[in-house]
Length: 393
Image (cartoon, rainbow, N blue to C red; front, side):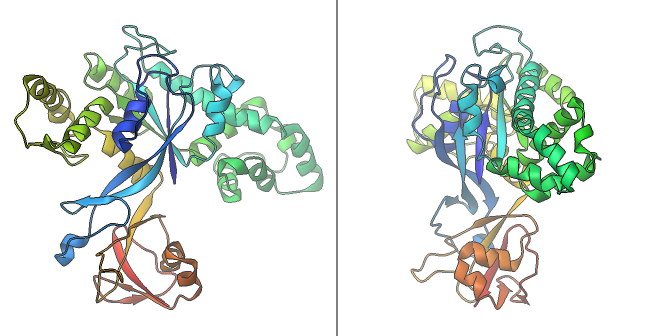
């Protein structure tokens, strides 16, 4: 799974990326500070099942604090997008090429209204324009891919009675679009499948929009929420885009809290609404933390960064977290307790889980046993979020 961070220059993408990954990246207040995409590991947060068994887990990947399990996901921070990117403006072509492998997008929006469409400092800018611009550029990206071959294969499909969804899926295969995805959009949108030659420009534009929204779903991170005009702009964003998930956040605050935690100044669990002081702080440090508490945590309940990542994975992509474990022994051969946790698409079966662990487990699958109930299930049994199963081969 790969989550792409997108947005105009200077909106806070790199700060969000660093706050999520603690990777060493350039954070600057000028446009196009990011040229090449940055890749790193972020984490989604779930309640670990170790507490139910009165044990403490030892994750191979990720980590666990007070039975809060942090499961790794791949993040990518790409160059800023400006209007006209779909036609190559700015770093548009590179930006869009970098995004082909993403499963979902987080659109980082500067909700303060203090940077204009190109990322330069200003006052009173309406961030609704940023969402409108990015939505349009992504739609035009998909439309451009479709238009390259549309007239030719629309005519071939119509004359030879080939299946339209297969031809379109082949054209978009590099963007992780499947035949089922295309078929679902064609049916839901009531497109003329029998006569694609008669599609209008509006049909093509609408289809590109529908396919892009389905294959690359997006959440809005309303960043810099602690600025004076941010609350009003957040309300405006939600009124303009009620269909989108919009989460208020302060990436800068999250980064400060995580760095303070790592240096032993405070105890902080990402996504929590508070922190605990561990050392005597300087006046400057105390003032900075007080502002974060007053302007972000006390108002919004968290910095929003962890909430964004969780909503992308569990609400937008609808994944579930599953623990492999032995019924009589929760540890692996090296003594690590509940060392693994897998993220799987909703609707995954016991057999899907077995293959996720290892292909040999899938090929030699006999049954799965629920570590809580000790009941055996077959390969078609559908799993639920935070299930734990032993695979018997």
